[in-house]
Length: 212
Image 1: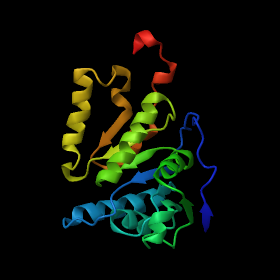
Image 2: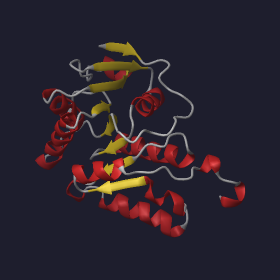
Image 3: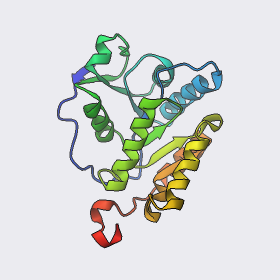
Image 4: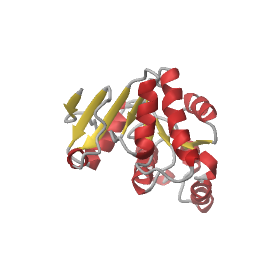
């Protein structure tokens, strides 16, 4: 099913429900030489399908993105792709998804992820994946959504990023009430449990200037 993604984005998303019906999965379109990364992507797709949690992702057929989608579909799961027209033109779109939303550009794509999902899980990826992760965290901090933001630290891939997140808090660029916005675990089961227990914190839009 293919649909144009106009109208998907809203200004502020209301707090998420306790049950995570769909998760946005952020990951790379590359296939690293070490098989641990592609296998972890397949495990994510398969496990979410088995738990009846839908996948919302970038709509591509290559690398970890394609592995997540293919594994979820093979296990009978729902997979919704959101992809810019430019990448469709480059012939990297996955044509076997439950739904494929084609949008104008990256801004519309990320807004659609937020609208369609009840949380975010980042697995290994590159610059595009980092862009998506940091925007999900930034929007949570500001109060544009109240959904959990998870980081699956496969094979220590994100050790230095986690250390940087902690450094921001130690120095004072990350407020104490926002330090728990990034939910981290080395196992998918542990991460999903932590995300299910997530409780929204006080966002910046509800703070006074004296608190900032």
